[in-house]
Image (cartoon, rainbow, N blue to C red; front, side, top):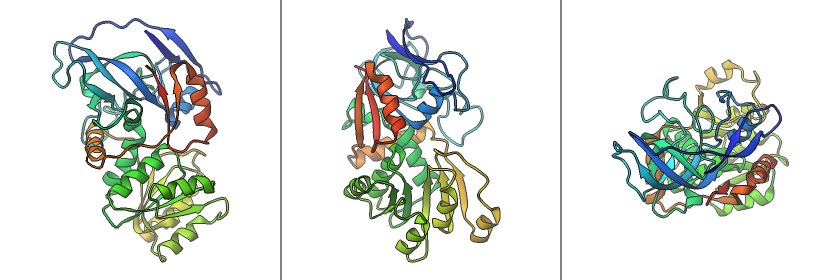
Length: 337
């Protein structure tokens, strides 16, 4: 079968096609024919050798994939041939709190991922796909959607009527917008593009701020919330935005750090957090249980993720380059078969 492999090299995708032969599944293994793979910013970092936890030897990239079960090992009990499944981000984090042990094996990083025509995974790493989602839509669930779910409802503990600030219009932020609106949460969203902000409003964003036109956007967030601040901020920017994110949160509010596109510095004064009882929470995607809870919520609310662009399997390099350009709104997906 055809696959892609990454040998991490600084400032190079190191992405190339290769042929691999898969053995028949044994024990609790499940053989999956992959139909779609979704890209995340993490995949760019891995390809360019900038991601902690990457494997030194060539690895099949990408954590997020959806496909059909075509064979199972003799001890498999969770799935049968013909089932539609999606991969969890962590091979071993099933439930409970994250530990160094259960978060060690990340698909597409420490162990082989999904950018291949077929893969063999342990049954515990897989979750059933919501019936109303296509292969392309389902592939977006494992990383971006679970990260948004964790930030909003696990760490953020949001409920109907609360306020959330979402930075940018990438995969996590757009998923967070859709999930938050389905849960009755009031959403404020930022971007440097008026066109993207208009699209965000069409998806239900209650208020938007163009940070290019309003550099001190935290002041606008406070104005929009009548000086109170938001209950939760999903921080994706990093250096240059974290201070503003903290300022945008209400007293006792939370800043969920889900990424750092521009890197992080030492710009936060701990006294700022102490004096306002604010909390910074690091979001490490989430467990398989969170993926299952998310999938149930998506089914109940008939949510369809926003897909920006779909590339063919042979266009993987173009897909990576497009994601790196930052021009996307929602998810970038590679259709495998």
